[in-house]
Image 1 (cartoon, helix red, strand yellow):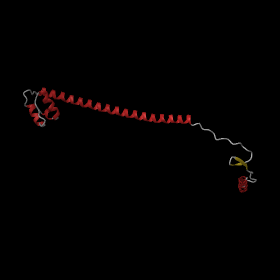
Image 2 (cartoon, one colour; image 1 turned 135 degrees about the vertical axis):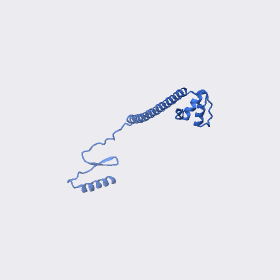
Image 3 (tube, one colour; image 1 turned 180 degrees about the vertical axis):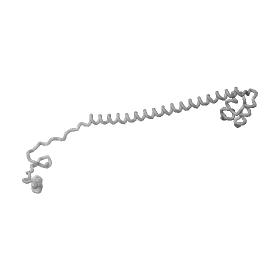
Image 4 (cartoon, helix red, strand yellow; image 1 turned 45 degrees about the vertical axis):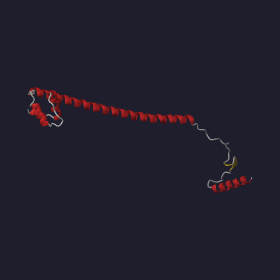
Length: 157
């Protein structure tokens, strides 16, 4: 009889329902135990076999539920990874598309070429004014004086 005491309340309720015993929701485990033991259909071997079946069924349901949870978690993880891959591909695709569009639409034109003269010159308005070359390497001051004089004379003309 001690084998009944080691089972949980839910298992005893399932056994009582199998035996056709009425159980109220307020019954405690000891009350259910007494009702099962006091039943005219009570046979120890029958009850023991029924409880083993109930326990196996409960364990199988728990294992099935665990498997379903793991499968759902795996599905959600794969779905998340797929979304991540799609987003990264979309960013790469947009970047490549933008790069192709800018390469196709942006034709870089070289700046207009001015005629090359043999002497150094500065641009005054639209005309080129020739500059004399410095006579010595360190003679940049004389170059500045000459170029400012040339500029002033061009302005006056």
